[in-house]
Image 1 (cartoon, rainbow, N blue to C red):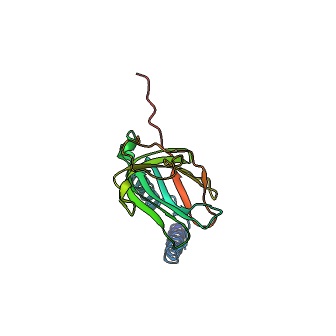
Image 2 (cartoon, helix red, strand yellow):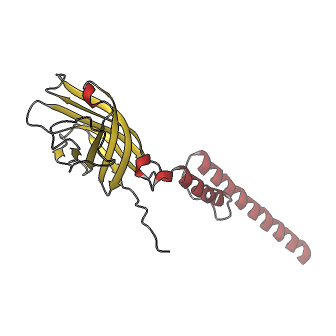
Length: 215
């Protein structure tokens, strides 16, 4: 066999070997995808750039709200009293500079014993401010079994302490909600009441205060 013929045969063998190696690599990659393995794609793959391109879109879709107060729990009492507060208050990201644009609902129930007699009220949130894990909110009572307080504004304060939350309310010093319409928005008392362990939890989303900047 001549040298030229030998070189041609060797070159052909090299091409076949490279082709076989490429087919084996492609086959292995196909098995990995089909089996759900989370192996990283090869450097030459176009999958990585596409995944990276989607990240900013996902972040925009889950944009954080400016502030929030949510949850429900019963207050700790040494008596048989059954006192429950529920909040679902939110300040949208676009309203970050105006806490009075908060929306949502509140409800509180005070019974002499579980399933017993007492009062209740519910309403709409009209202001929400949070600092760290402390939230202060107010709202207008829209429904209640105490007719004298309907239409009045009440305030609440919650300290979210991960398992030992505290709650305060605007009528703490006067014995009960009096239906006042003069209470300023986002005004309440210190969170003096303890949450009864195992009855619920409150969650506060810290407000990102829009501090003024120098001109």
